[in-house]
Image 1 (cartoon, rainbow, N blue to C red):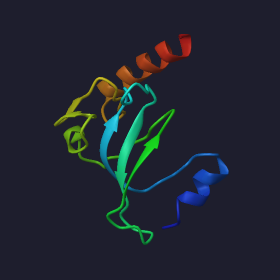
Image 2: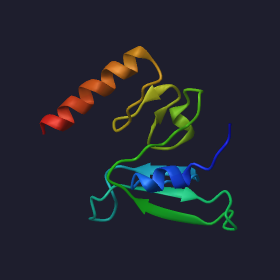
Image 3: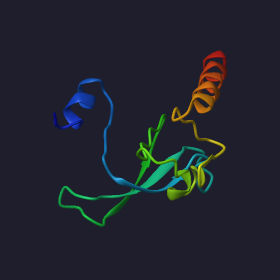
Image 4: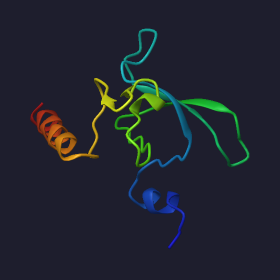
Length: 106
């Protein structure tokens, strides 16, 4: 079964963009602490164009192979970066739950 994802996410109020992530900047830039991601369009008639998108929460689905280093800012190789959570392995799931609990508790 194949269907477009954008309309599904739109109903939930999620800004879904299937683009190529070039870099992630969780600390912001130039005196602005707002996190952002640099992306490159891969379709929609905008191939090759780049954009910067700010975010509150970011889901960067990199596929089934653990290669966090493929996107600068996520980590190195199969090692998680400082601002990265993953649910690919049981150990990573446990780490993600601890991070989520800390977030919820403030």
